[in-house]
Image 1 (cartoon, rainbow, N blue to C red):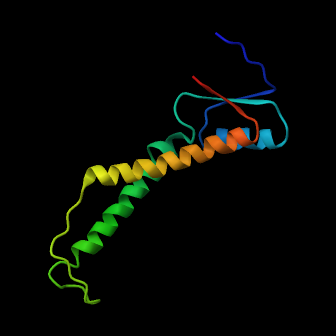
Image 2 (spheres, rainbow, N blue to C red):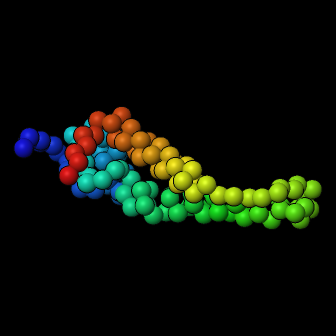
Length: 117
């Protein structure tokens, strides 16, 4: 196992951990952050963000469904609405991936070393 030394060790790259590590890096503190998964924590990876993305997709689908058969007061009519769940999940995964990359990029930009473990 490789030995790493630092002034500050942050355990967990969730919303508390990555913000702490980024600020420490901005202040010039030699910082290492340890995370078992992807940066961002539960909220970004499996909780709030993915849920909100899927809820948004469901709301958009509902809007389109109400336009079937000429029921829209806007004069918009569709014949059938279908949902490709695989595409919706891929869209949600893309959002999560971009946010993960953003957090990882911020950590790297301020010189924080990331250790997976």
